[in-house]
Amino acid sequence: MASIVFENVTRRYTPGARPAVDKLNLDIADGEFLVLVGPSGCGKSTSLRMLAGLEPIDEGRLLIDGKDATELRPQDRDIAMVFQSYALYPNMTVRDNMGFALKNQKVAKAEIEKRVAEASRILQLDPYLDRKPAALSGGQRQRVAMGRAIVREPSVFCMDEPLSNLDAKLRVSTRAEISALQRRMGVTTVYVTHDQVEAMTMGDRVAVLLHGVLQQVDTPQNLYDYPANAFVASFIGSPSMNLIEGTIRGDKVSLGTGIQISVPEEVAAEVRSNPDHFEGRPVIVGARPENMYITSANESGAVLGEVSHIDELGADSMVYVLASGVKNPNTDLLCEGIPEDMRVKVISAADTDKAQLGIRVERHHGLQPGDMIYVVAAPQDTHLFDGLDGRRIGATVAAPAHTIKADKVQTQS
Image (cartoon, rainbow, N blue to C red; front, side, top):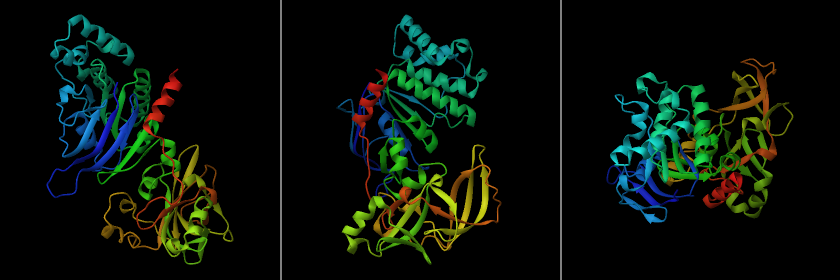
């Protein structure tokens, strides 16, 4: 097993251009399952490839188990990679695919057979050992790819979107298998995905990237409860957090013509202590769908909107409302690593005076598209972000890597 440290790691594909990964600083504990997540082009796969030695590091250092691995060859890093495409040899049986890397390393035949048998038992592949990949389902092929990595007994697993080729049902079961396997083996694992649900359900911690910059790294629950900026708030959670532009006026936030809410209690003291900084400052108000509810016109902060569509989810329903007189911000600019000259465009980014809001309601709601309703956010569950740089206003929490590892050890003991 091994710890991993990225120290100001940067990767540029074109000299003078914006880096694909920009000054990445990230500590990964020995035995931790860390997920890199973000939209396409955020730098997550590039970061993983630099860790595996498949991509050079232009600036900074990479430490594996305390040793500088920046210039180390891939074969000398003791890392096993699981690819999106599985990369199985079609002319070989499952048994031969799993043992091929060991055979190339001149490992004794008896040892190869022992490791393949053990990995096959863990992954429940015994009935398929003599089949070729063409005779396997997508999930079975994925398990073979996992088995090929396991038999190497590496210090680190690197997994690059390994579930993206599976159907929805199989993805759910396979991600549970991978999580259980990682807990059982205790191997440090870095896992890349664009699917935030996958990230939240699998990782001990999740690192969110955008534009090549690390936005936040924390436990799934802390990411959900305490997003560091407006982008993380909008990206983590399905459906995502509702965000509306506003302006601080005294101890209130003005959302639109005649619509005001109280400054959230969590940040009220900070706002009152620095009125010169906050008075008239643009902000973003956030509320999760489960923390919004339908109300009457006379409730403070209520917003009028038209039901645009309804997602019936079985256990409950998501009602989407086009609310008049308020705006959604452009969260792709409300994050770390964006130059100031780009951020000034944020407040005027929306070209409409309507915002889409999502409200989670009980399934027997009786609503129809076209209905006009008032909605409001629960004050104690409202978030506030700076409207100029997107950063969270108020308290944040973060679980460091060593704490995650200690918690895992206690859980397993």
